Length: 71
Image (cartoon, helix red, strand yellow):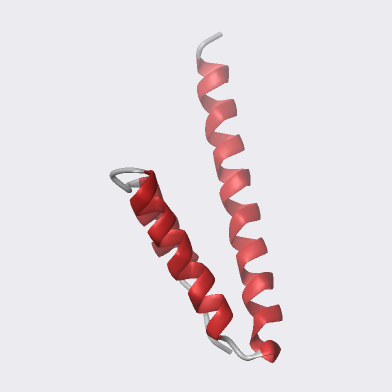
C-alpha cells in the first residue's frame, strides 16, 4: 500500500506566495489522484480524510489553547 504525503502538499500550500501558486499545488494533487488506478483511489481518499481530520483536530486544539490563554 502506498503512503501519500499529504503534509507535503499542505505545507507547500500554506507557504504559497499567492493564489496562483496554491492553485498549482492543488492541481498537482488532483493530477496525482487522476493518475491512480481506480482500485487505489479509495485508499487515497481514506488517507486524505484521515489527514484532514487530524489537521482539523490539531487546529481546533491550537485555537482552544490560544483562546483559553486569553481569558
